[in-house]
Image (cartoon, rainbow, N blue to C red; front, side):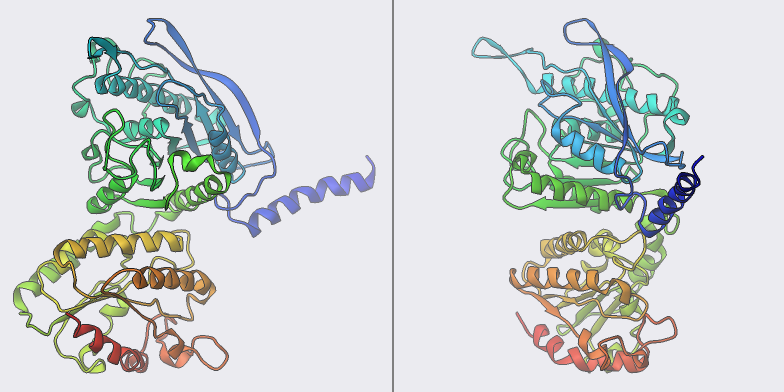
Length: 522
């Protein structure tokens, strides 16, 4: 062999490995091409014509050079109102390719289409809500069969069976939601189970689980949001807020599908189920098939799913419920401490919890002090009623700094914003006009590498507060920077994250005047 060619063959894998080390698998695009296998039969089932229909899927995966053979799987289910379209759609291709180039195995499936006409209107046969429920039922049976197929042949496709996720568009997302959350005792009454079989169906690959690790809902809706229960799989939601086909909220229904992505997001947060929400303001169904919007949507899906992978969930796997003991302590304080007409609340993470001299540093004695270390905004969203509702504070000040820390669990700035909006909404349900203030996330030595994302988060929340009545924003960050523009070490304890006593005094002195001004607003 030519020595030059041999040398090139030798160093190519080295360059490939170096490239992978420089990027983050499953987050960054690490492959320029992917392999695919089309029209694989994963099952067979009887359709509305009474014919046995072969069920096919396409698989997309990293090229053979990829040595990782325990990869997450993402299955895409196409839309089309349960009556048309196929596994080869534009958006399905966009999603499957984007994730496969990041190291996932992806698949796009066909399923039984068709909506019967068992309803009547003005003497004519029409498609009823029950007919659409049955169409959903058949589709989710096929989707479950596809999941079982990949569990059966996991070794062949290099799949980690503990990390199977599903997504889709419109009717496909409705199908995904039913796959993940619908139980046998919740099957809509209009579904003829004697005709179509059990929830798992008879589409193939019996004996394997159809459980999924998470769902990404793109402009789909549910018949009943109560299908989602505490402890269920995480759910990401996205939609246009001007969708006239499927509701993003619950302002109308599509053939019985009434509860859209925003409602599902809020419901998940109230249950402690991990969730994300990416709204596209003013956009319609399928984001108007706008390439830029859909590309942005796919990027948001990539960012969110990365936080749900196993390596991101090793710590704090119990989620929001890890703070139950702390909440019991707060319950006891609520019973023991009596508020007065001047009481204000400081709520948040360890920066609040560790501020033991808060009343002295702010020169304000009537403070309801509620900090629980390590919490993020999802935790606050779950517990906010329990923390705030027992009180009648004149104002609420919130500091939560653990959503962007430089780890795999980090949320994107827009996700932090949406969580904060939800927290505000919950507070507003009981206190419509109370002043609520976001205390800007402070710079720190430990998290300086992600200061750009933290700053973006602060700025997004600042813009939001400026657009709403009685929402405020206080930023003391520049006070903690030295002449070189970096965090000044003299204000931090040894962990290089939290303030020392001098730091807390500076924080109090910097924001004291603004805190008192906001606290006098009625």
